[in-house]
Structure formats: structure tokens, C-alpha cells
Length: 193
Image (tube, rainbow, N blue to C red; front, side, top):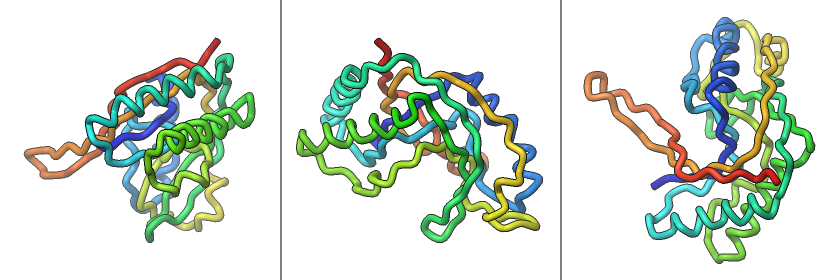
């Protein structure tokens, strides 16, 4: 199983993010846009996990949530940006929180606890910027990635109060043979006091 820790949003938040997609598409020639149900913030990517390791990752989520002991976190989803990754442009929207560094603290605590248990994961997690992926393989129309801030994005306000251990599942449509990725929550734990 392929897993990661995430902030998983309520359906109304995912819907509000998705309402921005038609405006964004006006400025792109192409892109693999994220399915509405898949919007999330990856807190820490684990990757392939043997089924017998799942319990350890679940315990780590429980431990970190208890350690954080934060009131509900207010967040604003806003600020389009992009970066090149493995030869493709990835479009994302930022997540600003109050307290300001709470997601970075959760990321660091998860990473620290995994290291304490001697579990090896990808070190690419160390440059953590809280964001939601909007689209991959984006090609912009009449603008460069430096001009993304000019695209209108209606900010989305929400509350964050949990860590979710998620599984990434590839599904193939038998008719079209197209593959899509679905993110399924495996375990959610609240960190509020």
C-alpha cells in the first residue's frame, strides 16, 4: 500500500476549492487537474508500506496528534503558485494557517517520530511548504508561470483539526483503460484539546 499523512478537508471545502478550477482552466492549454475529492495537504509522504507497518504509522499519527494539542487551526487557502518537478509544471495553491507554523510543526513531529522508530522514508519531505495540488503537467496559455498570481482565485476559509493517514489507490476504468488516482482516508485523529 502507498500511504501518506495529510490534512483531509471536509467536502464543502473541497467544493469551494473546485469552484476556482473553471477560472484557472481559462488560462491553461492543458493540465491533469486534481479530482475534487482528492484535494488535501500532504503533511508527510511515506510511499510504499508493508501491511504489517501500517499499525506503526497509525500509532505515529496518534502520538503526534496528542503531542500537538492545538485548538482548531484556522486556515485560508489562497495564492496560486507553481514549480517544476521531474520535467513538468505543477500548479498549487497555498495554505496559510493560524497558528502560523502549525503544519510545519506537525510535519517535523511526524518525521522525527518516524526516525525515532528507525523507519526509513524518502528524505524529499524536508522542504515542506503547505499546499494543495491543483494540477500537474500544466501548460499555460498566454502567460508564464511567473504570472500565475494574476489568475483569480477565490480564497477558501476553513478549520483544520486532524491528521489523516491516507492511501493512494490507482483505479483503471475498464471501458477507457484510463487510470486515475483516488486518495482514501485510512485513519483520522483529531489534535484539538
